Image: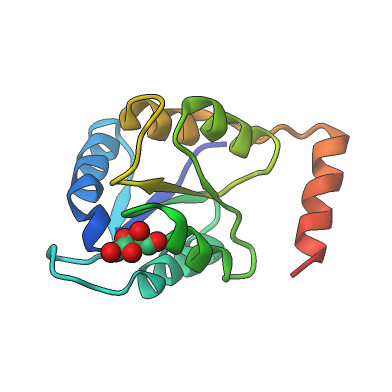
Length: 148
Ligand code: RB5
């Protein structure tokens, strides 16, 4: 898939890493929109997960990256949006599998947690891995969609 756009947001816990991710992705040539916050002041993560989820679902061939302290809260928020499959990954293996098998369209990272691989490799793997179109994966993804 040729990625049209990548939407990125965080809370205060993920603010610093968000900036590094945006710089990295723009350096790789991607069109990136920063959906906030604009400072590291304390904010509530649900609205930022929601922003990314909403933009990804209305923008064809786009992906999202969300970051909070643990990655958990903002991933739950993003997954509340119908059509979002947000995966919390701390390794390239999980980033790759979330794309190939689950068709994840939003990656969540926990900035204050342990990464098995460098975050740059996790993000890089996520945005360069295509969804596996094998029938068994398509069937399971359709079942996921049916749960919404
Ligand atoms: C903020 O203190 C923290 O709760 C948040 O970044 C995240 O870890 C929530 O899941």
